[in-house]
Amino acid sequence: MVYRVKAEIRESEAAAFYRALTDGTIQQQKPDGAEIVSAMRAAKITAPGRVEWYGTCFCESPLKHERETVYDKYLADITTEPMEDYGAVHGGSFLSCLEDAASG
View 1: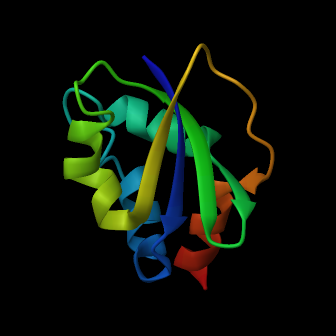
View 2: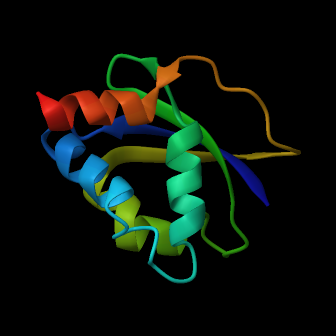
View 3: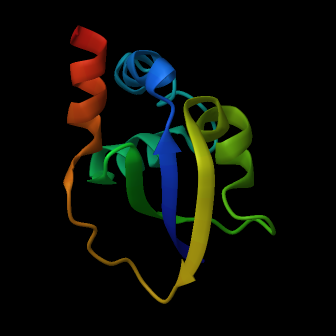
């Protein structure tokens, strides 16, 4: 199932999220680390403090494992909306936003 995902950015965790996404920590997570990293590279800032992306999940509860292991630590107020297919999300790069937080 494809979902459009929206979340609030935990500003206090932005630098740590960037490090975990870029140092291999999340990438190495099985079974979904590579997909999380890919999703966050494609994610967009759609409003101040808001990030959106598309993801695929076949769990009974959308993004259950991803939330338990990564997303709930770094993001808040996560919502999922079932979609027929992937679509475009317009906005600035979420990864660049995280990088700015890590370097600032």
